[in-house]
Image (spheres, helix red, strand yellow):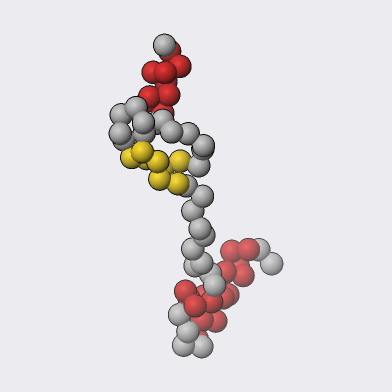
Length: 65
């Protein structure tokens, strides 16, 4: 059975049993791997999964120097 079919069947089952589709585990939220960083060059606040202290624009400027 395809993954989409299983999800569809779970939604239908939740509707018929009076439960909410969000209670069946279909719509679980994943923890984000992004962290909030403030650029040391310009002060811009951005999110990244890389280990850096500079935004993309400032990294380009530093690389070209």
